[in-house]
Length: 69
Image 1 (cartoon, helix red, strand yellow):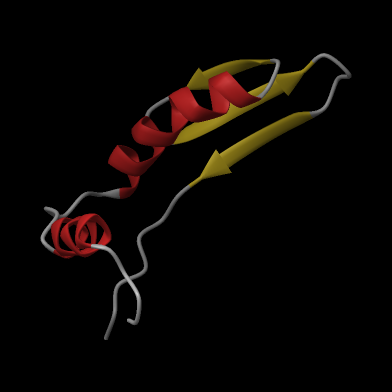
Image 2: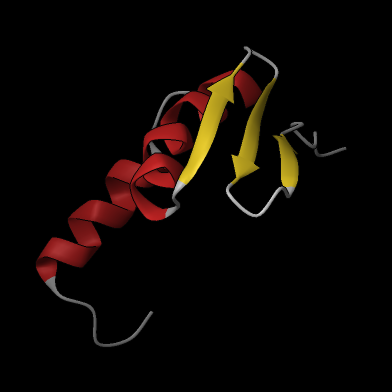
């Protein structure tokens, strides 16, 4: 990577060394971001994020880890 700052290089190294997390951890991390971005009822049931919007639309956001072979 060209033209990266020392801060960016540090952030990249930290990201590469981050501990393993599973799909549930990922959903737990993004739930507050979705709450801040959308006006909707939100429920995290441990397996998926369920969204209900004021216009009646409903969504279920799921995550599954893709393992490299």
